[in-house]
Structures are given as C-alpha cells and as structure tokens.
Length: 391
Ligand code: NZQ
Ligand code: ZN
Image (cartoon, rainbow, N blue to C red; front, top):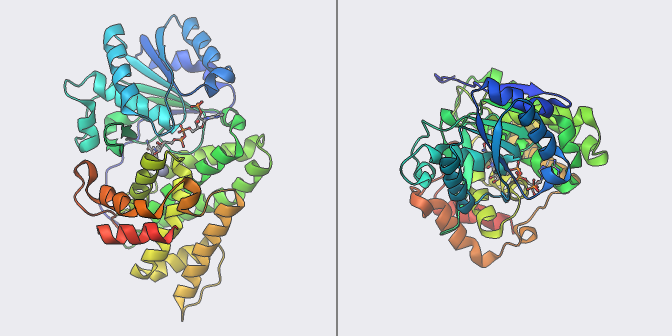
C-alpha cells in the first residue's frame, strides 16, 4: 500500500425529508447569503426547490437563485454565477440537483474568490480557496456530493475538463433517497454505470497488497449488481435507492482509492464523447469502459480474472486466466445491456470519422501532455484503438 492522506470533511445527512433542514445546515456552516443553484427544472417540478426556500426562510437566511445548469455543465453559466455572487455578496452556495449542478456550484465557488479566470483551475491549478458549498443530491451517480472534483465544459473549443482541490469538498450534503425516485430509468441506469466506473477506475491498479480497498470495491460492485435491477424494475423501491445512493458516495469520495495508484483513462476518453456528442456521462462510460478493459486486459490478466471471479462469479481458470478475465468483461457488458445502457459509440451519435479528433483532443487538448491512464499509460494511438473497439 502507498502512503496517503485522506481528508473528507463533509457532514452527511442521510434520509427521508432531510431537505427540510437545509436552512439549519447552511446556518451551521456559516452561510448568511445563499446562492441556490439548480438545473433544467426537475427540482422546480418536484416541489423540492420550494421546500428548500421555505427552510431557508425559516432560518432567516436570504438568497438569490440561478437555474439552468445543463447536463455536462457549461462555462458560460459559471461566469454568470460568479458575477451574481460578487454582485450580491453571496457567502454560501447551495447546489440542488445532480453532479452537473454540484460541479457548476463548485466552479462558481472557486471563481468568486479568485481574481483570475476560473478556467485556470480546469487547466491544472489546484483549488485551494472557494466559498463553502452545500448539496441536496437528486441523483446517485457522479459522487460530487463527497468528492474534491468538478467537471466543466468550456464552450470555446468544447473542452470537458476536471479540477480538484480540498476546497471543493462540500461542507454538507443532504442525501434523501426518496428524491431520486422521480428519475427516469435511463438516468438511473446512467448513474449506476458511473458509480461502477468510479469503482473500476480504482480497482485497476499496479499497487500491490491493497486488500482492504480491493475488498471494499468488490463489495460495492456486488451491491450495485444486486440493487440495480430492483430500481430499474420498481423506481419507488426506497431501500434499493438508499443503498445505491450511499454506494455512489463511497465509490467516489476516495475511501476506496486511498493507498493505491488509479487509472482514470476511461473517464478521460468518455469526457471527449460527452463534450462532442453531449451524451450522458454514464452512457458514454457504458460504451468506453468495456472496450478499455478488453484492450488492456493483458497488462495484468490476473487482476481482471480476480474481479471476474469475485464480483461476477465466473469460474477461475488458473491455467488460462484470460478465459476468466474475458468472461468477466462479458458479464459486465451483459449487465449494462440489462439496465438499458448503450453498447456502441453509434448509439451515442458517434461517427468513425471523428475518432482521430477524439483521440487527439483526449491526448493533447486543453494543454494535456499526450498520455492518459495510471494503470496502463495510453498513447494517442491506443486511445484511437479503444474508440474503434466501440464502433
Ligand atoms: O437538470 P434537471 O432538470 O435537474 O434534470 C437532470 C438532468 O437532466 C435529471 N435529474 C436529476 N435528478 C433528477 C432528475 N430528473 C428527475 N428526477 C430527479 N430526481 O438528470 C439529468 C442528469 O443530471 P446530471 O446532474 O447531469 O447527472 P449526474 O449526476 O450524472 O452528473 C453528470 C456530470 O457529473 C460529471 C460528469 O462528467 C457530468 O458532467 N462528473 C463529476 C464528477 C465529480 N464532480 O466528482 C465525477 C464523475 O466521474 C463525473 O465526471
Ligand atoms: Zn464518472
């Protein structure tokens, strides 16, 4: 196991109706003037936004609001949010929605207290200072409610890039699984795929003797395989929603990534797809991740065979571990298909002739250094080959 530090200061509030206490938590974490930030309207239609406003008023807190965050959140709205926060002397940002809204909130939080262009953070500058953020999560997926990350698309050039820093960890996050019951099955499945992808990005590592985190990841993956069909079958299954929601947080606050090198090439390859075709992040991962596995399996075939055996229940063939490894990848693909996820780039609107552009942007766009991945280091040609496997 590698040396590590782990700081996860977020105060989690989990359970039914907890959004009605939002005002209390904003106050507790120092907010006086709040920006309510949300997406395209689901929180308005469900009545959640009104309940949160009532809760803020009960605590005597004033607020301004900015809706309209799109999935794959854009830089344009971030600039608007920064201007609004400065003009209104906002000192706390409350994100109500999914990963896109939370990530947009984080970018506004950092940009408001920074003199330069907030995009500097998405070019690699660590985020050390930001307004405090609270979240009320409505979809189990990105894990941004507990992570130090934010992913934004810059409209100029359509670069989708991430920024990181401890200042991006939310002060509090309210997780009420019942709020996720209004999600359409496709979005639910995209979220499940993203959660599993966060686990696989950490599982495929060159670090030895990481039994604790291996086993935690395997347990979370098995939980997803067990709970996912229940919510696809019955969107109102509160207990299954609850298990998936907490798994989503655990998958990405890095409690199961500490002490080990991680990969993340599949995420980077996917970000090019959602930047170019505006597909859902989870759907892009459903296409890319199995292809990445197939392409890189021989780098450490025993690791692929291990997850196939322990998580997917494939029989271990010690003489020919590649047979077990391949069976595991097949099981993953079948699972994704069973929850309604796409299998090919075409289903996302992708075209073969775009592959050179996708690979080149993944490798060199926005100041990237030409390689991706920590488990297997990919060159531009490998990236193109992986995209080709998704056709
Ligand atoms: O915009 P509204 O109207 O709210 O609708 C949203 C949106 O259309 C809808 N939705 C959310 N909750 C709902 C609901 N509809 C009905 N009922 C509800 N309860 O779902 C759609 C997707 O929302 P979005 O926030 O985009 O989903 P998600 O949480 O999957 O976030 C995806 C974004 O997070 C980034 C992705 O790249 C993508 O941009 N990621 C962020 C990470 C992080 N910050 O740590 C890590 C991830 O790997 C990921 O890259
Ligand atoms: Zn993700």
